[in-house]
Image 1 (cartoon, helix red, strand yellow):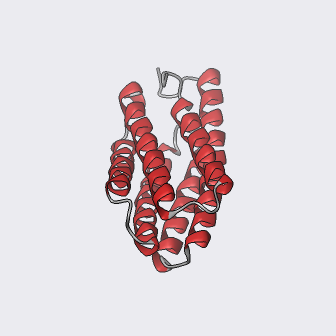
Image 2 (cartoon, one colour):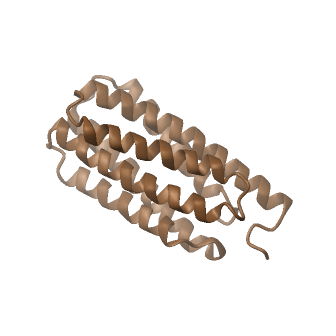
Image 3 (cartoon, one colour):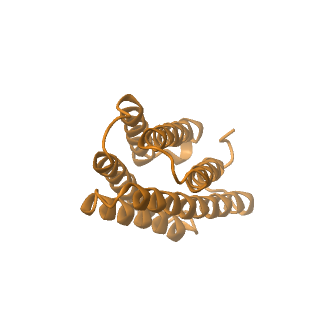
Length: 180
């Protein structure tokens, strides 16, 4: 499934958009539903990142697998303790986004020599990091505000991941990605 470069980014992008649209469709969702939805999304996103690490030996990066394990851990924590408060959700999501965003920034900078569209990847990491900081600074934004921010973040990040994935796939078809 992940043999073509960019496929994992496409899958992650589609998952992020679906996650964002589900949040928009369920604005009166309870904290429990959002926590579970976030947990499932983070686990699937993490598994996809870890799977990409193993399916793409030439492009392996410790940052990809680290981000994947961070996502899986955040998802498991969210599902294991669904009764946490909105502020705790904000802190959990904020920390997850901050660490994941920083790892994406580092990975994009490392990839800039061999990936033409590294700037979109960098922008995705920057957006994720800024989102994490905003949520950490204001964890009590209110449940609906947090839900709206999370939906917007997921959809925009999903679109950026899809753009990055398409760029990597085009690059793979036009030239060898890793010098093979």
